[in-house]
Image (cartoon, rainbow, N blue to C red; front, top):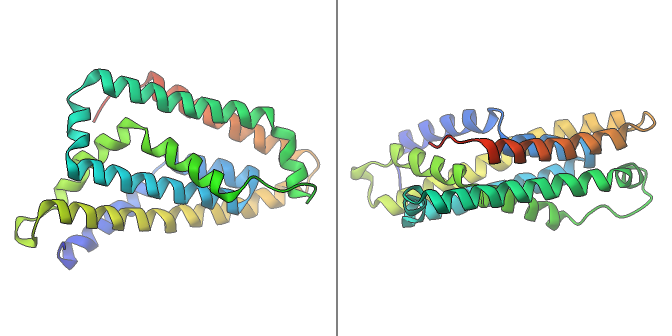
Length: 212
């Protein structure tokens, strides 16, 4: 296990990274505004699970193999962009459902589906894989034991703080979305905004030629 001072430093940096605007917290924000706190929290949990998956990939050397293969990297990047675009299109098509759900007219999408969305969007993003490959080893210390065990422990800490930080974002955005939804067609426009956000994130991922 990493030493306490290492864990404290890692946690502080991780919280700052998680708070910085990026695809994951923007997904949480958009879904919370459009669909409520529970939907946003589902995305948050899915993203956290995705982060821990990237930790395992980094610890087992999978991410290093990804970094050495531009073809695989590009394929995963396009797959991630395609998935985000598909979510965005589906969100736009079903925009009117949002107002009905908030008014109690139908059952909202299962929470597990939101977790799955967040997990897949995060887990197949190769830029996140390369981030963990570069980030985690900086906090591994030879005197604290095996590198693999330390990386897994650090990844677990990162995933847990992700749930707390994104959960706070989901709660605040969910309350704001509920207040806005009381004004006529606001729910429809919030849902459309979330759809456009997903498509924008897809375009950003697909067109970004930079790697870590």
